[in-house]
Image (cartoon, rainbow, N blue to C red; front, side):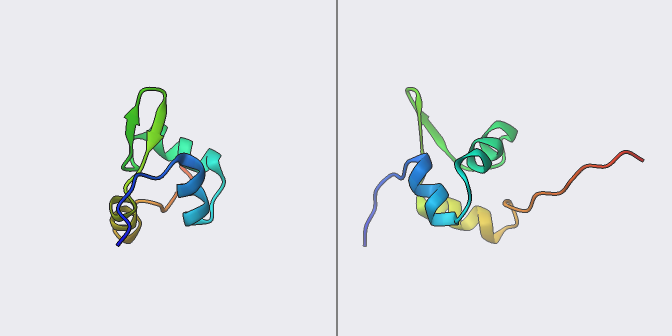
Length: 64
C-alpha cells in the first residue's frame, strides 16, 4: 500500500476538481491538509474520510 503525501495538484486530480477548489476549502479550514513550509500536503486517507463525511459539499450562502 502506498503511503505518501500528495501535493495540491495531485489531490485536485484525485478528487477531479480544479486546484482553486482545493485552495478555497483550505482557506475555509474545512479540508484536512498540512502546511509544510510554503507547500500544502495531504494524506489520501484523511481526504477520503473528509469527502465521505460531506466536507466537500459546497453550499451557496444566500441572504434571507
